[in-house]
Every structure is written in structure tokens, then in C-alpha cells.
Image (cartoon, rainbow, N blue to C red; front, side):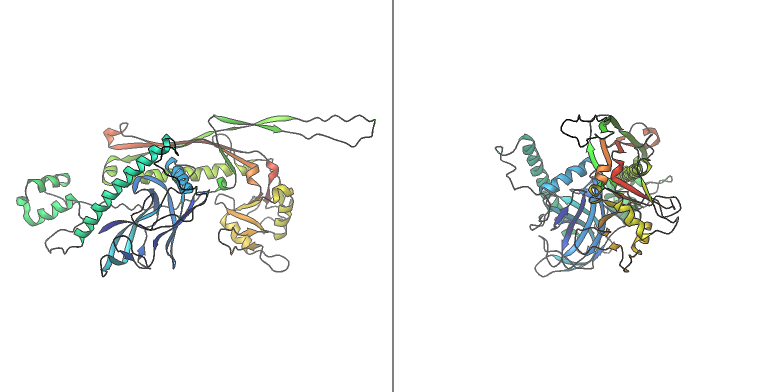
Length: 511
């Protein structure tokens, strides 16, 4: 049996698109009296974050689930930099207009509760959606940052025409949701009725129902049943058992280099951005009463950051799109992950020809020698940190990969204290020498002549300009004769180092 229940949820979201919430509070029944016990949840390998149960609106990925005393806590990330619906949902969350989470699941084991409802002890979670108005009457957002004061969305004296249109669309969506909920409750009630031994299972599709009747009655089952089976007939005129296409996809984990979280990111409508650049300093000197001032020669230049294009296309079977409605959403999710991963690599190691110029490829960034080709030295991390001007150092962040991070965690100072300081306060990052650490999978490992660590003020040092959000469109005509649909995706973005003196690298060498 498959059920989709709107549940009470508390949500929090930050500027980077990291979203946390309680998808199900323990000990509290929903509006129809159902309760899910702690320990009952099972999850697939990965779950996309979808909007209002629309499988075509994938806006992020759920990354972790945990059962606490409060309830089922979930954490994920929105594609705030790549997918337009995700950015819109992020803005709605920040404004307090996204009411909660909605949990869909398949119930495997439950018992009836006195007075109505059920107590589930074993379920398979199939989706967790963001929604405006959950069915659970107590569902609401209580911990969203930057929530504006409540206002009457339907009062034309306090809102503009755009807000009025949005409010009307929301009302229509709520009406449809109410109808869908009522229909779902009827289906659930029907599913709980005892099933006869010779009857087919209640959740079967029309094709499977027809096949079950055909097995019992043969060719006397009637024209309606036989017509439903025509989609599965074989070459000899018999009828094949229909296959079931699962809505769960097996995914590979995609890791990103999150340089966007520490760099300065801006939008542009031009093919490139030109930044004026001062290339020298004035030369003031102390002078006597009658002495003339000295002349200063100061130079100015320009730094141009062009926007580069990233694109691909995917050919997918039209039959798969018909048989698995979530297939297109899965393709969009894969494209968003692929683009995010490729951007992360380019912003770190791009050559500046076809891809943006990366942070690690700028020769103007200076380095501190480790003093040994393979053994990371704790003292040199201190030297590296204090080689930067105080203005940049006090806003600095460490960038390194997981392997280097493991090595750092084992380093100690002269008193035997670990340089790595774990954080015991919620929301506060862990630190090295008092400055936060960001793990980047595309940074090099600790090896001879490599630059495994870079430290500094990356908001000042690196600039990213987005020309075009990721655009995805399907072409069902180009390969129609081959039974394929081509899905195109493209994005334009640029990046470059604008202040190399704000960061410094560690080189695994003696000099």
C-alpha cells in the first residue's frame, strides 16, 4: 500500500541552501489519527527534494536522516545556484511562505488505533516534499531566518498585482490539494478492507488488475479486460504479465567543491565583466614648510572576467518517460549535480580557456614552503597563516580535501594540543588555529610539489559571475523515429582571481 501523508514539520534554511527540518514529530498523530513509531523508517539510497509533490520540480537532494527524541530530522541542500524553481523555493522559505514538509511512504506493518487511525511500525519512505500548506493542522515553520511580518496576501491595498496573482494561484493549489487528500483517504480506506483470496491486490494498476482477471476467466473476461492487456501481448497472441517500473532510482554520490560558499558570487547580463584595477601606490613623504611635494606615479588597469558556457545533452527512451514519470525529473537532478560538480572543479583548477580560470591556477598567488616534501609541518601552517596581512587573515578560511584534513587532525602543537579544534556549539564550524575549515574534494593530496592547502579571504580573492542559470529543455522531435527524447542543458558562468594577495598556498617542498 502506498500512502502520501501531509505531516507536521519545522524547517530551517540558510543562505547556502542547506535545509533542515522535522519531517515527523514522534508521539503526535496527524489529522486522520495516524502515528509512526520511532525506528519504523527505511530510506532509499537517495531522495530528491521536490516541490509540492511535483516529480517534475526537483529542487535539491536530502542528504541525511536521523531519529531523535523530537522526531524524524532531515537535512538536505537546495540547488540555489543552478535550478530556478530551487531559488524560488529558497526565497519563499526565507520569507516564511513555505509552511512545511510532506512525507510520502509505503506502509509495511501497522495496527489500528482506538478511536481511529493507525500506528505504523515499518514503513518505506518514498518522498519528502516542501509544501506551503501541509494537511497536518499543526504544521508550520518556526525557525526560518529572515522571516518577514505576516501580511494579508489577499488585500489589494497592501500588495501589488504580482502578489495578488501568487495568492490566487496558491488558493487554487490548496483547493486541488484538498481534493487530492480526500481522494487519497478514500483509497486508503478501500485498501484496508479484507482482500478475497482470488482477488488482485488493491494497489495494482489497471493493466495488472486486467491481467489478474484474465488469469481467472481467460478469454471470457470481456472486451474491456482484453483491450487493457493489448499493451502487453506477445507475438503468439497470448498475454504477458505486465512489468512494474519502480519510482526509486539507484544513484551515485556526487561530491562538490563548495568554492561558491566562500567566494563572492554576483549576476551579470553581459557576456563579460570588466573590473577596474589599481596597479600601484602613491608615494607621500614628510616635508618641510617650504619644500615641494614629491610626485606619485600610480597606474590603473582592467581585469576582464568572461562568462564561459557549460552544456550537454542526454538522450532518453520515450518509453522510459512514459513508464516512469519520475525519469525526466531524475535526468534533471543528474544534470544539476553534474553541472555543480564541473563548476566546482573549474573554479578551483580551471585553465581560463574554455572554463573559468581557477583559484589554484593563478601564478600571482604566493606560497609558503612546507619544509618537507611529504610530511606536513604544524609550524608551517602557523607561518602560512601569519604571512597574510591581518585584514585578510582575520577573515580567512582553510581550504583542503578530506585526506589532508585527516592528516591535519593528527597534528599537535608544542604542548601536545591538537591544532584541529572540534566545535561543540551548534551552527559553528570546526577550526584550525582558530579559523574555519571548508573541505573541498578537488584540492590535491599531500605529495611532493603539490599545493594541498590554501588559506585566506576568498570573498575578496575570488569573484564568480553568473550570466545564465542552468537551462533545461526537452526536444521530443529530433530523434522521434528512434524512440528517443533529447534533453538539453546549458549554463553560462565565469570566475577569476581579483585579489591574489588575499590568499596564500602551502607548497609541499623545501623552498
